[in-house]
Image (cartoon, rainbow, N blue to C red; front, side, top):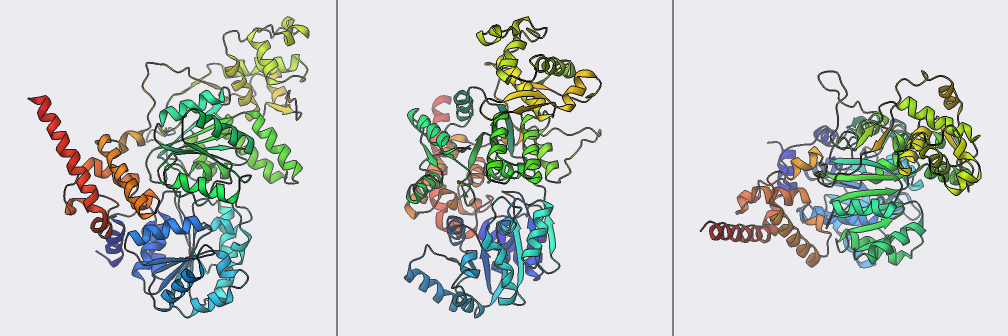
Amino acid sequence: MTALQEAVARYWGYTTFRPLQREAMDAVLVGRDSLVGLPTGGGKSLCFQAPAVVRPGLALVVSPLISLMKDQVDTLVGNGVPAGLYNSSLAADEKAAVSAGLRQGRYRLLYVSPERLVGEGSDGFLELLSSCQISFVAVDEAHCISQWGHDFRPEYRQLGRLRQRLPGVSLHAFTATATSRIRRDIAVELALNDPLEFVGSFDRPNLLYRVLPRSTLKRQLLDVLDRHRRESGIIYCTSRREVDALAEWLTGLGMAALPYHAGLSDAERSRNQDAFLSERVDVIVATVAFGMGIDRSNVRFVVHVGAPRSLEHYQQESGRAGRDGLEAECVLISSAADFMKWRLMLERGGELSDASQGLLRQMERYATGVGCRHRHLAEYFGDEYPTEKTGKRAGCTACDFCLDELEQVVAPVVLARKILSCVARVENRFGATHVASILRGHASRQVVSRGHEKLSTFGLLPHASLTEVRGYIEQLIGLGLLQQAGDEYPVLALTATGLELLKDETRCPDMTLARQRPPRKTAKRAQSRAEAESWQDVDRTLFDRLRTVRLEIAQSRGVAPYVVFHDTTLREMARLRPTSLEALLAVKGVGARKADDLGEAFLAAIRSHSSRRHCQVGEYGA
């Protein structure tokens, strides 16, 4: 076993590497600049933490958020790794203690903010670092350096100056969200020297993706929450008003939910974030202000009430689910109105460029598309999605399409032409609800007052619900056959492509349209393969007991529960049920330091549970 493997096993409790981890670690160990792109939950932090333990000297880790630094340092110290942080949250005596520790060579890793390294007044701190033996610099969340990235931080662009201040020290960039364009920008701005590039697949097979056309929002949210009782989740909204309204509504239902947005005071935002991270509340309702640095690993669902402005944003925000590698659900509840609002906001802000419209259009295609969600996202980010041996496209078994929750229309072109014809008959002057009423044969006051019950398209879809027809309309908008115009009262209009299809039914031979299958009360809830496998042979009662033990330890030590152990480790304990320290060390995620420090508390819970279980078996068997 190499020194690196010994360190990973001893401090982190892992005996194997994830894809590209070993290659990324080797680049650090040999002092070769590198750029590493791994998905959230792909283990990128270990790529620089493990080499820091093996390679002599001090590893400098640049991190964008104080909360992120604290959680990582708490976890490292809990694992027995000497680590510290230096940022504006420290009191003067704490800064002095860290400075003394640096001079004495007490740390293997030091987490700092970019402002501390390159901001005003950073010269003295850099001088102190220059006197230390810096082994390498790791820039975490490196997409913040790129103006093309959605979390752009201007201070990050100055980090290239470290080349002059720390000559001969290798630089390593790490990110979980980077297109090829952003990766090029990172390499240039950091002045990386002929870097090795390791880019893994950004597909997250443990995430189950669903897209729902917005209809009865509260009912749709309750359906998601019912699937995740006593589990944690994030509900993203596009407006502060909706955040406050939904948080208040959930609280009124007896659910522990808190709001988070930029309109709250700094103190309230901090309190609400801490309550979520420490598992005092399980649901946070937020705008995108609640984002980077949210390191709670056991988020089991993320819901977007309204589409984000790009697939990059959606991938980053939905990716906060299932960071521990276990199953999680990502639901997008969307309507065509979302994209109209974005275009209006971007136009008012002077940001409605060809590039921003292109990004929004890609998001709209995802929201209205019919097909495998995993494939759509993977191919957008440049991944080759696997095919079956037969040459057919493989199903992911982890999205609404592949779980057969969508029912494809038998004759989509015929259906599309009925809808397009109706829009043409009302001369492109009415909205989606009015058009749907005509098609359904609903003689509403608005329809009758305009004589639209006499149109040839009246009643062409008599058995379809309003939600179903509106869903078809939004899919046609996503396909570029219809468009919406007008701000306050948007109306439907045919595009040039839609007009062509109306004239010639052969124009779109590969078109697909679908509707949500009606729920069957007797049917078993759809389950992804990842969920089925992750719970296989797990004693769920024991798992819940171990979660309680973890929470008690975390509260007594003032750390987040996932700093103690991730859910993956607790499930493995509940699967293997170890009763000795030696057996506990065989559980993935349990290192030597954690076993010595915390092992007995978890072993006692396992023994107690096993004893009670045996008594019950004996009682019922007697």
